[in-house]
Image 1 (tube, helix red, strand yellow):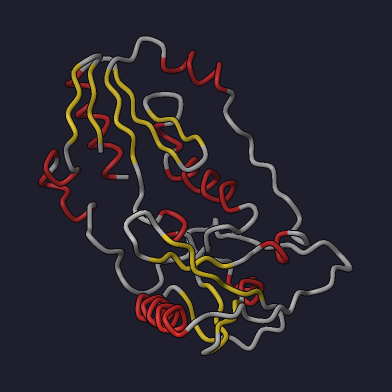
Image 2 (tube, rainbow, N blue to C red):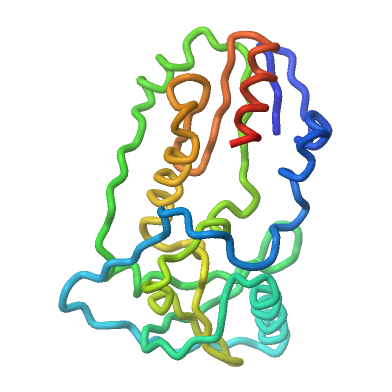
Length: 227
């Protein structure tokens, strides 16, 4: 979390700023499924579309070992489960800057047959008008935000992916899936509705808390943490 006031800026963790709300800043997401919130990620296929059934990508022994490790971690966290779905896409490993690997589901084939949802996006000029006069800002990043939003139970089978070791489907939104940003914005605007246009802006997967004074900002952040 960043607190800034004009040219003066401090980079502090949320737990350091608000120790009474330390439980809101866990190092890892809690295991298991959260309650259904009424806004889950829905996948609607274009009528008449052919369901993809792609083969797994080739991988070397090191990559196979890494994939097996990452899938096991996803299973242990309750983010995926084994699947018998006929809808299958492959995964690959993408190198990260720190030398580790990120497992990415290749959603291209599935995205081509998904009906696109168009959630209203705040115009930049309107957002700037809303922020006019504010001098203190905090940009909120949710830890693995998509992995905190459930798939609609009847649509989980449409997220199946394949590795050399098995077939799995997502219980939460995977990265790279069409309409994921729209679902995130819908949920955030729903949860934060009492604060929208007052001291909170949601823009895609970014959340901004803004205030006219430091005292107001502390109050606004506490309200945000309690929602």
